[in-house]
Length: 387
Ligand code: GDP
Ligand code: MN
Image (tube, rainbow, N blue to C red; front, side, top):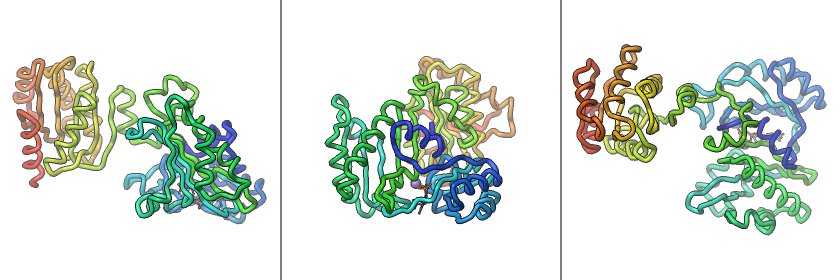
């Protein structure tokens, strides 16, 4: 789950991480008043669940309340497209209005789970700010890493090591080391999948301040954090993903044109590879889960077909707990409810009641190509897209 910058800053400031003074505005008038209360100059920032706002015009330094109100009218209730959003962008409903910070240096600080390191990793760089992706590509030596031992936890010397590595002034070593430790604590206690401060600003008068903040949470741990649910903002998320969440279907929207419906997460990953080997790109990851009934299968197909970029649907069902005839009936159920949305399907079914499932589909009016195995699925995709 993602949350807004202003919410992340609220959480982080509870962990003793310094953030700029400010408030949230929903209208140009509120923006005007906040800027006035901050003394006339401020930074006004679109609150969306995506980074890259600075480059996309979503962050504006203003020098008067009326300039701020004008910017607010131009951006509120529009959608902001950044390099991290799709072409439709995400709606801007709130603005964060903060005191303008005198920036001497921009650092990068992030905490993630690294599968290869088998644990939590702290990443930091002296070259923070909006170009961090390029820094990571072109000068990886500027990226510092520290692996947090899962048993010992974060060690104070690791914080000092990173702070020294960032070439900070002696007076900043302790506060930055403490800030890194606090960020790790926030990450762990809230079951984050990402905690990022970019930029962590060193101000002209020598303080360290989180000028931007991003926290993502592990969805599978949300049951332990009911207090975080109030931060969920469905409007910022992909409509298909919001729908899938309701039915407990694992769905992630991707960029290609072949929709995927699969039971099992590992099989769903392998199925995406099949799409690629067929010369196309997957439109989504979808795992229906083991105990699906007809209704849930129908919902899964509805969700995949609600994506207008899907030209073809690849179904890969390994019938175990979910029987193949149940899956087939679910597809027919979706087709009957919304026949105009149906697109051609390539179906591989194996396992419990596979023959019955295949019979149901081949006797239906659906445009189905039944295949025997994954090689056959790749071939059918290649034929369908004319590659
Ligand atoms: P992002 O582009 O979505 O990551 O949004 P950020 O919150 O990181 O803002 C983008 C950039 O705007 C930052 O990297 C800073 O360079 C700049 N910026 C944001 N707030 C301030 C501020 O208070 N003072 C100054 N001088 N620059 C700021
Ligand atoms: Mn940023």
